[in-house]
Amino acid sequence: MKFHTEYLTFNVPGRVGFINITEKCEAAVATSGVREGMLLCNAMHITASVFINDNETGLHEDYKAWLEKLAPFDASPERYRHNRTGEDNADAHMKRQIMGREVVVAITSGKLDFGPWEQIFYGEFDGGRNKRVLIKVIGE
Amino acid sequence: MKFHTEYLTFNVPGRVGFINITEKCEAAVATSGVREGMLLCNAMHITASVFINDNETGLHEDYKAWLEKLAPFDASPERYRHNRTGEDNADAHMKRQIMGREVVVAITSGKLDFGPWEQIFYGEFDGGRNKRVLIKVIGE
Amino acid sequence: MKFHTEYLTFNVPGRVGFINITEKCEAAVATSGVREGMLLCNAMHITASVFINDNETGLHEDYKAWLEKLAPFDASPERYRHNRTGEDNADAHMKRQIMGREVVVAITSGKLDFGPWEQIFYGEFDGGRNKRVLIKVIGE
Image (cartoon, rainbow over all chains, first blue to last red; front, side, top):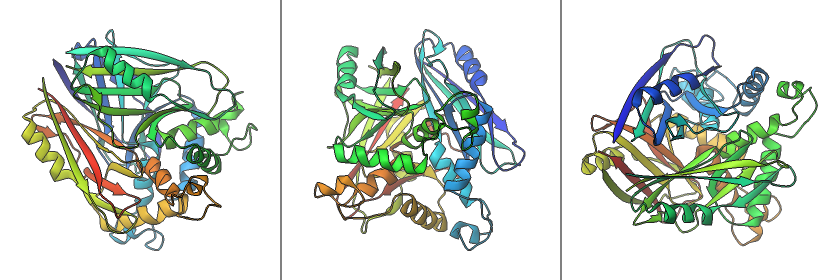
């Protein structure tokens, strides 16, 4: 059984942004030598997501506006108790729950077994600092 | 180590619908011969979900109404930038994030290791065309 | 290849509550003897979640208020069709979709491969009865 572990680091300017990490995941599968198995890719920080969706800029803008409506940024201590601790990122902890922490992708014949439009994204909701993403490949 | 891969195809009439795929996942476990391991089941399209919840028609109607409120269908280019590309399904990309892309289920003693009410559903949010679901079983 | 399966039981008073189960997951990894692999931890009930986020009481209160706003409790048969079946927990089935059913965590060098703040929580949305959580560890 083969295992391969990689850590990616991102520093996204601004509060919210999306980065396509599909190629990095594909490279990790190639490095691992796994032909059949699974890839786990997850944010290691709790105000960020890894998710699979469309590589379309307009949709990403839609996601930003939609998440802002569902869980508005508000640094004041009134709306969110978490922001009474000195933090200002309670909204980011909520946005991350909507978009998810991780994806698990099948590996078949040495490739990520994807539908036609599936792409893997890192989603940042509290940017401006270094944050890590984990890739774990297991299989044979 | 054993691996088994299957692809299901669905064509759901209308925009939104849910299909119980539990038996198909159970059959994949039986075919695989895996006694201990994991099953991954994911939508291969980015306007659809695979999720685990209750096999109750009223609840499914509730989900439809709730998702429509959180992310309304609107084909016009005003509300969603994605729909300026000629698409009309930005809402479906959002509904899918709420309901999730995939489930990972434990296999114990050759069976899906489920609680009393867990059932696996395909969730369609932009129907009327063929779409695929992947099942990957790994274990021993 | 090694496999280890555990079931935890919780009985959360009130409707909604969060329990930190990180130590129980760490103990399962230690018991399994797995050095490289993955841990799956999922709610076995469909009105509960397992999720990874911050061990901060104020944030948990924020989650409760936010989920109540997105999917309000309403036992009456008017708002939710599911509650025409004699149930009163349709809201809990929705809250669970936002927070998710399961987490998959990498195991590296015999430990959960976590970022600095990642903690695993059981999230209850329809408490006052015994409910189970599954932990499955696979690897070598």
